[in-house]
Amino acid sequence: MNLRTSNIQRLKRTTHVYDALVIGGGVNGAVSAASLSAKGANVALIDKGDFAGLTSSNSSNLAWGGIKYLESHEYLLVNNLCKSRNHLMRSYPSTVKEIRFLTTIQKGFRFPSWFVYLGTIFYWIIGRFFTQAPDYMNVKTIKQREPVINTDNAVGGFEYSDAYLYDNDARFVFNFIRSAMNHGCDAVNYVESTDAIRKDGLWHIAAKDTISGEEFEIKAKVLVNACGPYVDQHNESAEQKTEHRHLFSKGIHLIVDRLTKESRILAFFASDGRLFFVIPMGNKTCVGTTDTQVESPDVTVTADDRKFVLDNINTLLKLDKPITEEDVIAERCGVRPLAQKGGDGVADWVKLSRKHAVDVNENDKHLSIFGGKTTDCINVGDEIAGLVKEMGVKLPYEDYKWYGEDDDTVKDKFYHQAELMNLDEHTVEGSSEPLTQRLWRRYGGNALELLEDIRQDPRQAERLMKDAEYLRCEIEHTARFEMVTKLEDFLRRRSKITQVVREEDIIDAPGLKEACKIFFGDEWEAKLQEYKDSMA
Image (cartoon, rainbow, N blue to C red; front, side, top):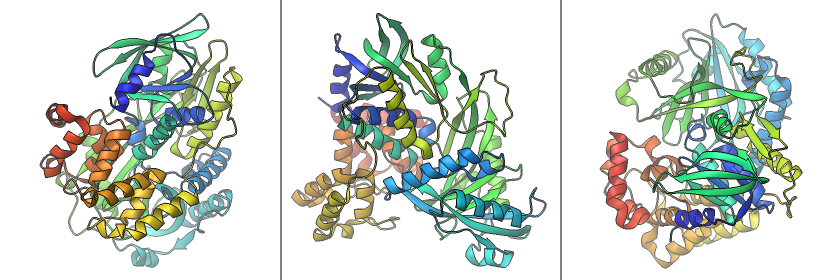
């Protein structure tokens, strides 16, 4: 019996009552489940799609303190986000890393370049000097540091530091799901909440397995609505009236071959004044922008979006040849749900706060999480645990530290064993980091099991799929412990293969069939065809 099947069987126990059911497996739901389960609550989590399937897999991969919110004078928000960023960097040093941002100011910009630079100094101070200091640059210095930047219309620029996720956002979120399951949470993907009724002092949630079509009921004392952009929709079905509602900000990113040798983020102000990023992604580059106001959370990259990004990147950089649609390897598109107080759908878009909000219905034992950023995720987990406790749920391990990488004792043991095995000799050619570093960052203490697999069978250190870094032992580990229900779950979210390898190269990869057999056994052909159909 695989992990998903066994967890569904546990969800279906007719007499069992969970302390809390979390609906939604994005970052807010993942940290809620991880925090509650580690503190001793009996928790379940369901998501109608895959974990981190929407907003949490389509971000800019940044964990930043919100420097752009200085312009709207949200100093308290920036202060809190900087504190959260620093905390995240200390807690996940292998994953959340400092990176330099190089920003170029063009002629005619709404503020002088020196004034914007003073803003970065203020930002550094608010950030408690945790990162490298900002650095002002004239046009000549910009050319020296990043020759790829088009400085024809530039008046100056500066570098400052923030943080980013070295791997990808969906992987970071899934590791919270994995942590929750390690502490006893019954987490299942592709299970939808179709109705939620409060009666007899409990929540009765009508659930549907969207893979098999089977329907069953889950009972819980507390219901946590962490449905991301669909929080309002689920609140309607649960008959919950809230103080906040969501507005939506769309982000678009295109992934192309690497545009610069330097490992820094290039930040510009696009032709319409929005921030525009050029972000390193291993051996590729992610380019795009955010903050396009949209009415619905259901978004796609349009032809106009694509043209906007390509026009701006070709204007802002001096490339040997212009980037065209044929150069695009993959696309990322999602919405950031923004918490709006009052819920009338009308707001000053610039002044609309980017911070999260939790609406509490004490009588119904119901929580709704609005907004949120990856940067602030640890605080969200702690806040939800505190509110659930106030609703009468006992947390026997209330002070347990539920987040962060495994301690240095485990890390030292892993690195020592990896060195004895000469593990880095198996690093895939062209990889952006040594194999030892990558395995620790992705799997933490569980990477010791991968070393044992390789020790017993050296073939486990072989790369299974062309153009992808993943070893045979990783595929087998993922099949056992990471609830890959559809092939896309692995290719897009447990890994970032579809973000850095073209679709046609993935389909033709000799190792893909073998990976499917490892993931799905006798169903491998159907699952492979399902993936091909989804790409059509």
